[in-house]
Length: 402
Ligand SMILES: [Mn+2]
Image (tube, rainbow, N blue to C red):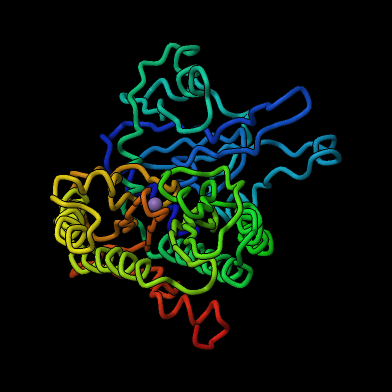
């Protein structure tokens, strides 16, 4: 994996002029109260180039060298909080040979370079100015923003990064199976969320984003995350969730019948959404845009929603399907560097997530897979996570007919 971070550094450094320097900060801890800190959130652009998830580090990249500055170990800190990353570990994780201490970092060393790049828009939590913005002001540096260059690099994934996403999806699958093992009527939605989180805890990974566990009509609210209502017999429940692996995200939606069996009406609507998913996957290849893919879904619904008596004319589709079908996926759940109008290229990883939301019928259905764009199409990275009504019913009824 550490070779991948070296490749990422090369992609980025190749995209800038000679005699340039890029300076990146990993981020700092943020206090949440007098006695607490938020979990540390590393600047994903820093992580993309180093594979290291630690606060207070600095990366300096030039055409000739990569230098990583880490914190010196501290006995008092170690007694209370733990070890800081060592030079050996930093080298092993990043494949950077030149590791120095932050105390040795001298801003004056940037002076000789013609172009001084900083990640001025750092995605790390910063309610005022970013660390880079403060740094360039303090040192009166005429900085160029490197954000878009790194974001572009992040939008295509190397094989090692795809493997991490697949590992995140395998953990996500375990969590979904545990949900199905325990799903029944009169359960608080948060209990099902807890079942998912149990599997993540066992694998020592964190969520990619807040879990949506939305039963019945709650599923028609796209970002319902309160998860505090009770499942009802006969309803569907929509889950949108994902595990991470080394910060690479999975993002999966599945919709299950609370009782273990779909009604005929639920099944015909579900199959319509599943057909939309399959239609999109069949059409993904280099050169198409995510907007093109969304148009396919709308066209499919214009016919099918009329046939299934949800709408009377095609202009009503937007009342029942009101989000895009795809987004980029990687170190962020909604990853950077790929817009809806960009033509897909080999190495993009995107979600495919058609849904349908019918408040009058207490139904929200979304089915979401994650795919890798290849030379002649795509590979569905989450194809092993069951999703047909037959497979779901069989699983929920322990292999017996529902
Ligand atoms: Mn998604």
